[in-house]
Image 1 (tube, protein in one colour):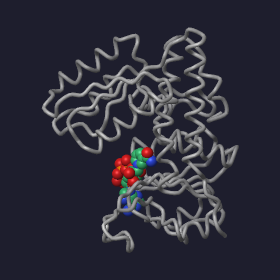
Image 2: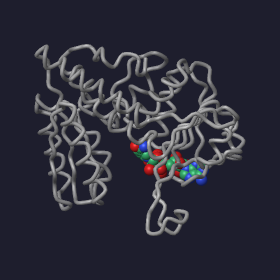
Image 3: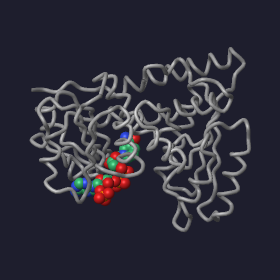
Length: 309
Ligand code: NDP
């Protein structure tokens, strides 16, 4: 069997097109112009690249982009003051704290300080609880972007997920844990596997749906999969040049799934790059527009209908 490729890059383009349409309609109807603020503390080069890319995407879609950059030496109180100011500003609808924060800052306290209505990353305890308590079909708060994007790809590919055997490999609060909650809301039968799981290949072989978010390059092999499984590979791992198979001096991005062997067994699989990665920023923009609508007392945009049901 050769798996169908789930093209996250083109799906993300379609999500961005929906965002652009929703923003234009809100403007035409004199509704809010969604505005997204990103708070960056310090000078981590990877974080700077992410922040620039978020700003560029926002502007391209008509979302107002605000960047608040603080030095790595900023104190807890200084970061908190910026969050408070953004919370209080009615023209700011979404707030994202670029992680990781420099050592010495209390990340949990900063994340919990963000107004849950503006928490476009879905990391505030109130949004975490809303997702956990929502139950089947309940309206969630704001949903973390990477699991949200993964769910959109799954629903576009499989339709109804009800009754499917799903295994989520990884239980981080950013990906694994919210992903499992989302699948549960879709009435899948969900197993969460992690570093203490015994006989991992055997557990994974149950999965009609596998979401791998483990952070270990090419760990999941083809013979760990159930034939025909739908595989969402969240992993983004950069292999050094010496491990990149011949192309001298070049690093290579790989997922948590060994694509070559998995594609022989799976029914469908997301590639890396070009799978879940592009969905994350598209979903961030989606969340910024949802947040703006909810703050204005409007229904969620009609343009997003059918993305997650
Ligand atoms: P974390 O390191 O926070 O979590 C990894 C999880 O995998 C943990 O739950 C851990 O278990 C589990 N794990 C680690 N080793 C093993 C093992 N040998 N066997 C079984 N389980 C194991 O990672 P994240 O969730 O933040 O990220 C996961 C991957 O997704 C990374 O490659 C990351 O780069 C990528 N990512 C991609 C994004 C995107 O936009 N596409 C966004 C965010 C992340 P335990 O809890 O027991 O320690």
